[in-house]
Amino acid sequence: MCTVTFFPNTSGYILTHNRDEAPSRSPQHISVEKTGGRTLIYPRDTKAGGAWVAASNSGLTACLLNGAFVKHHHNPPYRRSRGLLLLDFFEWERPDDFFQHYDLDGIEPFTFLFFQKNIITELRWDGSQRHLKNLPPDRAHFWCSATLYPPEMQAKREQVFREWLAKTHTPMPSALYRLHLTGSVGDPENDYVMNRGGRVRTVSLTQVVARQNFSEMRYFDLLDGLQDKRRLMTNKR
Image (cartoon, rainbow, N blue to C red; front, side, top):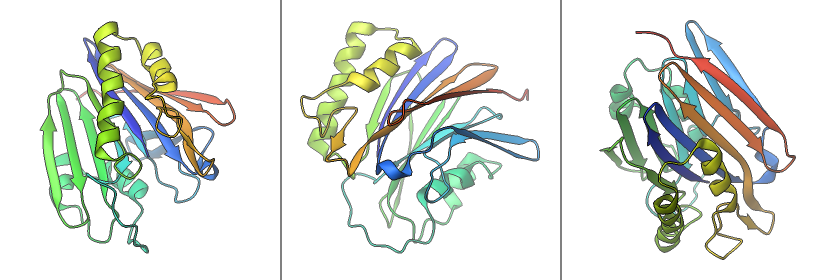
């Protein structure tokens, strides 16, 4: 997995995430987790119990893609699920401490994206080294999983996004949702909603609309046609 787009606007940003996975690992609703003064909303993976995108009432949003730069050799067992790592992130008081000091040994390669007002951080773990950088928060961004899409296909899929954006200019959440359903490179195995013989396919779409005072998560189960929506008010600091 997966395909992710980020689009900033005057009130916050729109994060849209297609999940490409085995159909058996598709939940049907958004989970709400409350611990102390912290509240998280996220779709919970039905196998490992982790998540691939989550938002908190502290105004933080994070998501995860499998792989770093290129497809790696899958070599289980791994010490901890990447989806649980995503939830671990929200336990840390300072995001920078997590990026620098979280123990990544024994964890399969991934791309971790963190979004906050005026901050986008990308952490890629290739299995031996961290690759950390900040991205401009006032620009649109595109990512897709290195385990499913080689570099040349990643470029083709991003080109679809850039060409669409050039025509659309200031898309609403509904327009980005439609793009994530219809974006095409002319190949069903590599389109935004993809299907590789039923073994791996786009099982769901999750969208986070972040504004100054709240974040709203919308979850669409593409297999059963179910939808869920949750809103979190942001804690004042």
